Every structure is written in C-alpha cells, then in structure tokens.
Image (cartoon, rainbow, N blue to C red; front, side, top):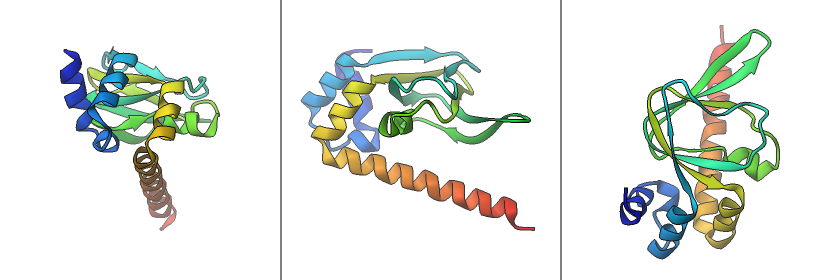
Length: 148
C-alpha cells in the first residue's frame, strides 16, 4: 500500500479525520503496518504498553484473563483503536487483543501516540469519547448480568 493510500485509510478513522494530511502522512510513515493471522495476539494482558493499534481491516476480540480462564468481553472492527488505555494510564495491558480473522493494523509507537494527543486536542477528545463509550457499554453489561 502506498503512503497516500495509508493516509486515505487513516482519514477514515474518526479520531484522525480532522488532522492535517501532512501530519497523517508523517503518522503513516512513522507507524508500522502489521498483519495478524486468525487467533494471533496483538498483545497479552499484563504486557508492557508500548504502542497502540488502529485496526484497518479485519476483526479482533478483547479477552480478559479470569481465574476460570479467558473470557471475551468485546469485539473490535475496522477503525477501532486498541492499546491506548495502557499508554494513557502508564500501566501494563489490561486485556488481551487477539485477531478473530486475518487482520491488518497500524502499530503506533507510544511516544508518537502521546505526541499526537498533545498536538491535536480534537484527537484527545475523540479518544476520551471512545473510552467513555466503552465504560458505558461495560457498565450496561454488568447491570444486565446482575439483573435476575
């Protein structure tokens, strides 16, 4: 895929839509396009939070390790951002992300991700909205499971 095609792909990601194309070109250039096979892990719960990923094509599951084994808590599709929570909180990965089919993602280094948030307040707001949305969905699931 050409650099220009990468930029066009990134423009489809909601949190990148207002970022200047020249900056997106720099992001595409400094990031790594990675391929995951079905059932291959992006990272595991407890790993160091060294990067975030934008799923460009394919799907991935969010898995939590429990005393009784791994449980699937969410499914992510194209344009989803994963791995940002550990970067923002400076903590290890809180979940495992595993491709549920062949998946292409853009790996964004921690330093580059934090620089983007600092330079583009609209991106920071988009990340906060996404995190709030996920928290709301998790709360709704917990309520549904606890209701008889």
